[in-house]
Amino acid sequence: MKKLFTTIYISLLCLDSMAQRQTVVADMDTRLPIAGAVVSTAGGKRLTTDYTGRFGSALPIKSATISKKHYMQRRVSDTELRQDTIFLIPQEVVLNDVVVTAPGFSFNTQKALRSVKENAALPNPAQGFNLLGIVQMLVPTKKAKSAERCEKIKKILDRY
Image (cartoon, rainbow, N blue to C red; front, side, top):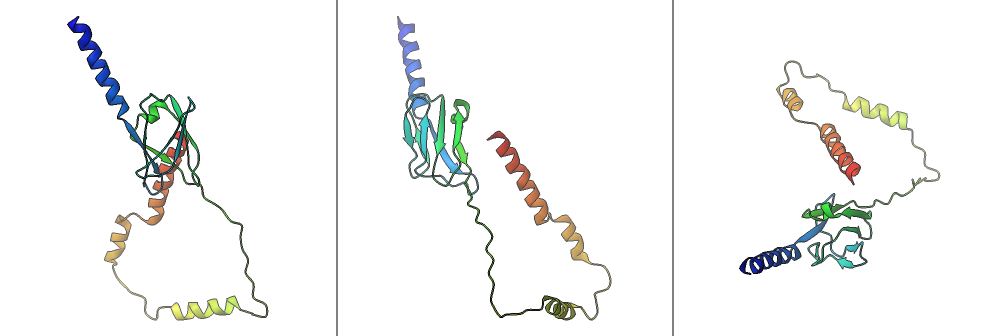
């Protein structure tokens, strides 16, 4: 009888600890929490994140859909819900090209480009060894950093 009560007591403690688990919904770009995101569970229950981006449920959630205005909707499984943070990708609004013209204004780009090149030419270019050139080779360039970031985002989107 004692073992039965002990087993029931331990199982109730485990259920109570599951109820305290909370997940944070955050922006993928800024890593800031998203307040007011709607979490719709497969069982029809709707939860809303608070100002810290947290939501939680006393009942286990098998799958859910997380949505917020200006963010891409995301469906998550129970394994993803067990993580502490779920990231949403912001939707970007792309506008069409805008062409601005001014009537009666003529500008000779070739002439302007020629004068800029003449003014930018160095009278005596530097001769000898460039120590800072070695430093530039060691420091990763912006292009390399952006390529790494693109690869990371591509991996994340493949798993999204």
